[in-house]
Length: 279
Image (cartoon, rainbow, N blue to C red; front, side, top):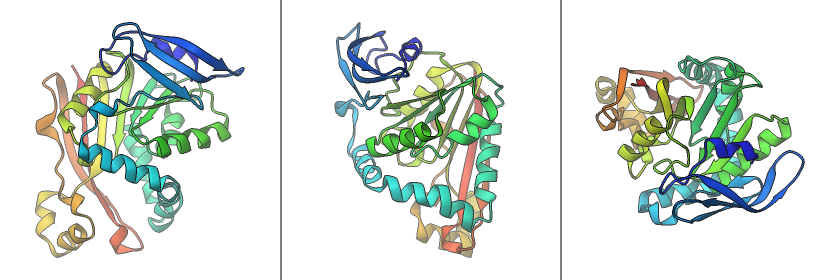
Protein backbone atom coordinates (compact mmCIF):
# COMPACT_ATOMS: atom_id res chain seq x y z
CA UNK A 1 0.00 0.00 0.00
CA UNK A 2 1.22 3.49 -0.84
CA UNK A 3 0.35 6.45 1.33
CA UNK A 4 -1.36 8.30 -1.51
CA UNK A 5 -4.03 5.56 -1.48
CA UNK A 6 -5.58 7.47 1.42
CA UNK A 7 -6.83 9.98 -1.15
CA UNK A 8 -9.50 7.51 -2.30
CA UNK A 9 -9.74 5.03 0.60
CA UNK A 10 -12.30 5.40 3.36
CA UNK A 11 -13.92 3.35 6.10
CA UNK A 12 -16.25 0.78 4.48
CA UNK A 13 -18.59 1.10 7.44
CA UNK A 14 -19.11 4.85 7.85
CA UNK A 15 -17.15 6.24 4.85
CA UNK A 16 -15.04 8.52 7.07
CA UNK A 17 -11.41 9.41 6.32
CA UNK A 18 -8.57 7.14 7.37
CA UNK A 19 -5.20 7.77 9.01
CA UNK A 20 -2.19 5.49 9.28
CA UNK A 21 -0.94 4.02 12.55
CA UNK A 22 2.06 1.89 13.55
CA UNK A 23 3.07 1.49 9.94
CA UNK A 24 6.25 -0.16 8.70
CA UNK A 25 7.48 0.89 5.29
CA UNK A 26 9.96 0.01 2.60
CA UNK A 27 11.19 2.48 0.01
CA UNK A 28 8.13 1.80 -2.16
CA UNK A 29 5.20 0.89 0.10
CA UNK A 30 3.67 0.53 3.54
CA UNK A 31 4.05 -3.15 4.34
CA UNK A 32 2.26 -3.34 7.70
CA UNK A 33 0.37 -1.26 10.23
CA UNK A 34 -3.22 -0.06 10.51
CA UNK A 35 -5.66 2.20 8.70
CA UNK A 36 -7.68 3.92 11.44
CA UNK A 37 -11.11 5.42 10.79
CA UNK A 38 -11.39 9.01 12.02
CA UNK A 39 -15.17 8.59 12.37
CA UNK A 40 -15.98 5.30 14.08
CA UNK A 41 -12.44 4.52 15.24
CA UNK A 42 -12.36 1.08 13.61
CA UNK A 43 -8.89 -0.24 12.77
CA UNK A 44 -8.06 -2.12 9.58
CA UNK A 45 -4.86 -4.14 9.52
CA UNK A 46 -2.26 -3.79 6.76
CA UNK A 47 -0.37 -7.03 6.09
CA UNK A 48 2.15 -7.67 3.30
CA UNK A 49 1.15 -4.32 1.80
CA UNK A 50 -2.57 -5.18 1.60
CA UNK A 51 -5.03 -3.35 3.87
CA UNK A 52 -7.81 -5.66 5.06
CA UNK A 53 -11.18 -3.87 5.05
CA UNK A 54 -13.28 -7.00 5.37
CA UNK A 55 -15.98 -6.61 8.01
CA UNK A 56 -16.75 -10.07 9.43
CA UNK A 57 -20.13 -8.85 10.64
CA UNK A 58 -21.07 -7.89 7.08
CA UNK A 59 -20.64 -11.41 5.71
CA UNK A 60 -23.71 -13.56 5.12
CA UNK A 61 -23.51 -17.34 4.82
CA UNK A 62 -23.32 -17.28 1.02
CA UNK A 63 -20.44 -14.78 0.91
CA UNK A 64 -18.59 -16.70 3.62
CA UNK A 65 -18.96 -19.98 1.73
CA UNK A 66 -17.58 -18.57 -1.52
CA UNK A 67 -14.81 -16.70 0.27
CA UNK A 68 -13.51 -19.90 1.87
CA UNK A 69 -13.78 -21.75 -1.46
CA UNK A 70 -11.73 -19.13 -3.26
CA UNK A 71 -9.16 -19.05 -0.46
CA UNK A 72 -8.54 -22.76 -1.06
CA UNK A 73 -8.39 -22.62 -4.85
CA UNK A 74 -6.29 -19.51 -5.56
CA UNK A 75 -3.44 -21.33 -7.32
CA UNK A 76 -5.60 -23.77 -9.30
CA UNK A 77 -7.99 -20.95 -10.24
CA UNK A 78 -5.11 -18.89 -11.62
CA UNK A 79 -3.81 -21.83 -13.64
CA UNK A 80 -7.25 -22.37 -15.16
CA UNK A 81 -7.92 -18.70 -15.97
CA UNK A 82 -4.41 -17.65 -17.03
CA UNK A 83 -3.33 -20.75 -18.96
CA UNK A 84 -6.03 -23.34 -19.63
CA UNK A 85 -8.83 -20.93 -20.61
CA UNK A 86 -6.72 -19.16 -23.27
CA UNK A 87 -5.38 -22.51 -24.50
CA UNK A 88 -8.68 -24.35 -24.87
CA UNK A 89 -10.47 -21.30 -26.30
CA UNK A 90 -7.81 -20.95 -29.02
CA UNK A 91 -6.98 -17.46 -27.77
CA UNK A 92 -10.58 -16.24 -27.69
CA UNK A 93 -10.71 -15.81 -23.90
CA UNK A 94 -8.01 -13.11 -23.71
CA UNK A 95 -9.44 -11.45 -26.83
CA UNK A 96 -12.91 -11.26 -25.25
CA UNK A 97 -11.50 -10.07 -21.94
CA UNK A 98 -9.65 -7.23 -23.67
CA UNK A 99 -12.91 -6.24 -25.39
CA UNK A 100 -14.63 -6.01 -21.98
CA UNK A 101 -11.96 -3.61 -20.77
CA UNK A 102 -12.34 -1.54 -23.94
CA UNK A 103 -16.02 -1.10 -23.10
CA UNK A 104 -14.94 1.09 -20.18
CA UNK A 105 -14.16 3.79 -22.77
CA UNK A 106 -11.52 5.27 -20.54
CA UNK A 107 -8.22 6.88 -21.45
CA UNK A 108 -4.57 6.86 -20.51
CA UNK A 109 -3.87 7.93 -16.92
CA UNK A 110 -7.41 7.03 -15.79
CA UNK A 111 -8.14 5.51 -12.38
CA UNK A 112 -9.96 2.17 -12.71
CA UNK A 113 -11.42 -0.13 -10.05
CA UNK A 114 -11.48 -3.90 -10.62
CA UNK A 115 -14.12 -5.31 -8.26
CA UNK A 116 -13.53 -8.95 -7.24
CA UNK A 117 -10.24 -9.14 -9.10
CA UNK A 118 -9.57 -12.75 -8.11
CA UNK A 119 -5.98 -13.55 -8.98
CA UNK A 120 -5.76 -10.45 -11.17
CA UNK A 121 -6.67 -11.84 -14.59
CA UNK A 122 -8.12 -8.50 -15.72
CA UNK A 123 -5.19 -6.37 -14.60
CA UNK A 124 -2.83 -6.70 -17.61
CA UNK A 125 -5.70 -5.89 -19.98
CA UNK A 126 -6.74 -2.82 -18.00
CA UNK A 127 -3.14 -1.64 -17.80
CA UNK A 128 -2.86 -1.90 -21.59
CA UNK A 129 -5.63 0.69 -21.78
CA UNK A 130 -4.68 3.11 -18.99
CA UNK A 131 -0.91 2.76 -19.35
CA UNK A 132 1.79 2.88 -16.65
CA UNK A 133 0.70 6.35 -15.53
CA UNK A 134 -2.89 5.34 -14.87
CA UNK A 135 -4.05 4.09 -11.46
CA UNK A 136 -5.37 0.55 -11.11
CA UNK A 137 -7.12 -0.47 -7.88
CA UNK A 138 -8.05 -4.12 -7.30
CA UNK A 139 -10.04 -5.67 -4.45
CA UNK A 140 -11.35 -9.09 -3.53
CA UNK A 141 -13.08 -10.76 -0.59
CA UNK A 142 -10.68 -13.71 -0.66
CA UNK A 143 -7.37 -13.24 1.15
CA UNK A 144 -5.88 -16.11 -0.83
CA UNK A 145 -6.89 -14.62 -4.17
CA UNK A 146 -5.83 -11.03 -3.46
CA UNK A 147 -2.48 -12.13 -2.00
CA UNK A 148 -1.79 -14.23 -5.07
CA UNK A 149 -2.75 -11.35 -7.36
CA UNK A 150 -0.38 -8.96 -5.58
CA UNK A 151 2.45 -11.47 -5.73
CA UNK A 152 2.05 -11.70 -9.50
CA UNK A 153 1.99 -7.93 -9.98
CA UNK A 154 4.97 -7.42 -7.64
CA UNK A 155 6.96 -9.77 -9.89
CA UNK A 156 6.12 -7.55 -12.84
CA UNK A 157 7.25 -4.50 -10.81
CA UNK A 158 4.22 -2.46 -11.85
CA UNK A 159 4.06 0.58 -9.58
CA UNK A 160 0.54 1.78 -10.42
CA UNK A 161 -1.50 -1.09 -8.94
CA UNK A 162 -2.98 -1.14 -5.42
CA UNK A 163 -4.74 -4.03 -3.67
CA UNK A 164 -7.28 -4.19 -0.87
CA UNK A 165 -9.21 -7.03 0.71
CA UNK A 166 -12.87 -6.11 1.11
CA UNK A 167 -16.47 -7.14 0.61
CA UNK A 168 -17.92 -5.86 -2.69
CA UNK A 169 -21.04 -4.87 -0.73
CA UNK A 170 -18.96 -2.61 1.56
CA UNK A 171 -16.34 -0.99 -0.65
CA UNK A 172 -13.62 1.00 1.17
CA UNK A 173 -13.59 3.85 -1.36
CA UNK A 174 -14.84 7.40 -1.33
CA UNK A 175 -17.78 8.45 -3.45
CA UNK A 176 -16.97 9.52 -7.03
CA UNK A 177 -13.40 8.15 -6.91
CA UNK A 178 -13.00 6.18 -10.15
CA UNK A 179 -13.05 6.99 -13.86
CA UNK A 180 -14.37 3.48 -14.58
CA UNK A 181 -15.41 0.33 -12.72
CA UNK A 182 -15.19 -3.26 -14.01
CA UNK A 183 -16.48 -6.48 -12.46
CA UNK A 184 -16.02 -9.89 -14.05
CA UNK A 185 -17.31 -13.18 -12.66
CA UNK A 186 -18.79 -13.00 -9.18
CA UNK A 187 -22.01 -11.02 -8.90
CA UNK A 188 -24.11 -14.15 -9.57
CA UNK A 189 -22.90 -15.57 -6.26
CA UNK A 190 -23.01 -12.39 -4.15
CA UNK A 191 -25.15 -12.62 -1.03
CA UNK A 192 -26.38 -9.03 -1.45
CA UNK A 193 -26.31 -8.20 -5.16
CA UNK A 194 -28.31 -4.99 -4.85
CA UNK A 195 -25.97 -3.49 -2.27
CA UNK A 196 -22.87 -4.50 -4.24
CA UNK A 197 -24.23 -2.89 -7.41
CA UNK A 198 -25.09 0.27 -5.49
CA UNK A 199 -21.55 0.35 -4.15
CA UNK A 200 -20.01 0.06 -7.62
CA UNK A 201 -22.12 3.01 -8.74
CA UNK A 202 -21.40 5.02 -5.58
CA UNK A 203 -17.61 4.93 -6.01
CA UNK A 204 -17.71 5.74 -9.75
CA UNK A 205 -17.46 9.32 -10.96
CA UNK A 206 -20.42 10.96 -12.66
CA UNK A 207 -20.75 10.00 -16.35
CA UNK A 208 -18.18 7.23 -15.92
CA UNK A 209 -18.65 3.74 -17.34
CA UNK A 210 -19.39 0.61 -15.31
CA UNK A 211 -19.17 -2.84 -16.90
CA UNK A 212 -20.35 -6.10 -15.32
CA UNK A 213 -19.70 -9.53 -16.84
CA UNK A 214 -20.76 -12.89 -15.45
CA UNK A 215 -21.98 -16.33 -16.44
CA UNK A 216 -25.34 -16.50 -18.14
CA UNK A 217 -27.19 -17.87 -21.16
CA UNK A 218 -29.81 -15.85 -23.06
CA UNK A 219 -33.29 -17.01 -21.93
CA UNK A 220 -34.16 -18.45 -25.37
CA UNK A 221 -30.98 -20.54 -25.49
CA UNK A 222 -31.57 -22.01 -22.04
CA UNK A 223 -34.30 -24.24 -23.51
CA UNK A 224 -32.15 -25.61 -26.35
CA UNK A 225 -30.34 -28.96 -26.14
CA UNK A 226 -26.96 -27.24 -25.92
CA UNK A 227 -28.25 -24.78 -23.33
CA UNK A 228 -29.69 -27.53 -21.14
CA UNK A 229 -26.39 -29.40 -21.39
CA UNK A 230 -24.39 -26.35 -20.30
CA UNK A 231 -26.74 -25.66 -17.40
CA UNK A 232 -26.20 -29.23 -16.20
CA UNK A 233 -22.47 -28.54 -16.07
CA UNK A 234 -22.96 -25.21 -14.25
CA UNK A 235 -26.29 -24.07 -12.81
CA UNK A 236 -25.04 -20.45 -12.74
CA UNK A 237 -25.63 -20.32 -16.51
CA UNK A 238 -29.30 -19.78 -15.62
CA UNK A 239 -28.36 -16.41 -14.10
CA UNK A 240 -29.89 -13.25 -15.52
CA UNK A 241 -28.25 -9.84 -15.85
CA UNK A 242 -28.99 -8.00 -12.57
CA UNK A 243 -30.63 -5.06 -14.31
CA UNK A 244 -33.61 -4.86 -11.94
CA UNK A 245 -31.23 -4.45 -8.98
CA UNK A 246 -29.38 -1.41 -10.35
CA UNK A 247 -29.87 1.95 -8.61
CA UNK A 248 -31.86 4.68 -10.33
CA UNK A 249 -28.89 6.97 -10.99
CA UNK A 250 -27.66 5.12 -14.08
CA UNK A 251 -28.10 5.82 -17.79
CA UNK A 252 -27.32 4.37 -21.22
CA UNK A 253 -28.01 0.86 -19.96
CA UNK A 254 -27.25 -2.00 -22.33
CA UNK A 255 -27.26 -5.78 -21.87
CA UNK A 256 -25.91 -8.40 -24.27
CA UNK A 257 -24.89 -12.07 -24.30
CA UNK A 258 -22.10 -14.03 -25.91
CA UNK A 259 -20.14 -17.26 -25.47
CA UNK A 260 -16.50 -18.25 -25.43
CA UNK A 261 -16.34 -21.62 -27.15
CA UNK A 262 -13.79 -24.17 -26.07
CA UNK A 263 -12.07 -27.25 -27.45
CA UNK A 264 -13.73 -28.99 -24.50
CA UNK A 265 -17.48 -28.39 -24.84
CA UNK A 266 -18.13 -28.62 -21.10
CA UNK A 267 -15.75 -25.70 -20.53
CA UNK A 268 -17.53 -23.31 -22.92
CA UNK A 269 -18.39 -20.10 -21.11
CA UNK A 270 -21.63 -18.28 -21.94
CA UNK A 271 -21.79 -14.84 -20.37
CA UNK A 272 -23.78 -11.65 -20.20
CA UNK A 273 -22.44 -8.12 -20.32
CA UNK A 274 -24.18 -5.22 -18.59
CA UNK A 275 -22.78 -1.77 -19.32
CA UNK A 276 -24.07 1.59 -18.15
CA UNK A 277 -23.00 5.00 -16.91
CA UNK A 278 -23.50 6.80 -13.62
CA UNK A 279 -25.65 9.89 -14.04
